[in-house]
Length: 127
Image (cartoon, rainbow, N blue to C red; front, side, top):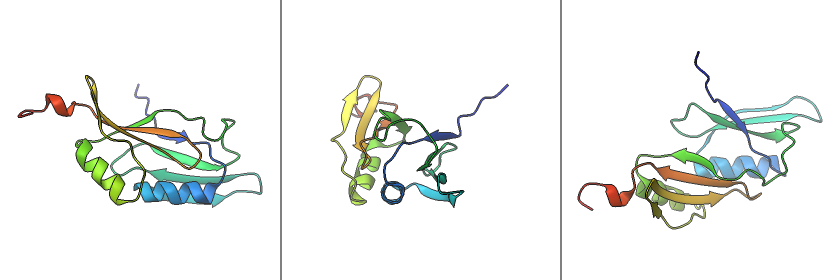
């Protein structure tokens, strides 16, 4: 039996502001549906990902900003760093650890993200 992770709720205070931020990061807006005064569902997908995030109203009990260390994986951390900076996203410097190289960023509510290259840059051939 396969079990696929396809959607993760991200708790935010301002849905429009969060949607604009994640589009700035490069996520594609797939859905934006207001179901009722209590429920709005916005789905965004990172490029190349089979898993999406959901922002909205009435979707989760988590406090805005409480999501910590959501992680996405890229093939080239230096390219990801340059791309995010080029999009105007405030990112950390690249951090090299034994299990990968990382940059980190937070959304306007403080939900924290890690972008990982699974092979540390220091382990790459020629370095």
